[in-house]
Image (spheres, rainbow, N blue to C red):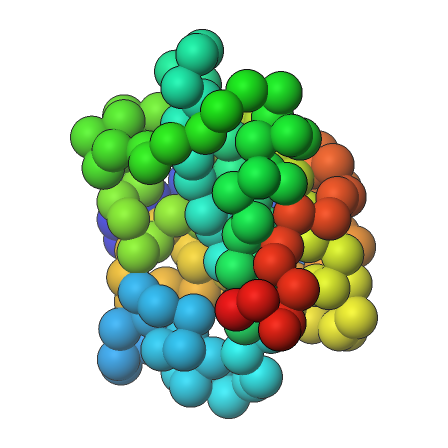
Length: 161
């Protein structure tokens, strides 16, 4: 088992979340791939989107429903600073995960996290579990608590996507 998957399993257990991390036969790098593999709707995928603060250099994590897109202006307002692209090397160094497998939990250095309320419309959502082939199901309210995220509106309206 990879170190990343092990760290996700440990983080879930530490949060009191009983969830089986599943290894899929196909890649789950994108929200569409993950939804197809899990057999769920696109919005049941809890995407982990990371941005870098342009002033602080800090990472900010936005957990959003798979079909939603993060609005850069709203995200920057929540972060309190302009946001830019997070580089793969910083993501790997601070979270311990490679792009395409960034889990909502189990980060080496937990970033400030924001949570898309759309995820709470479901009984179960699916998150990446540390690799591009591992995912886990979870009650979204439990995920909100486990990530210590701030519930906030940071997505584009559907007509703007």
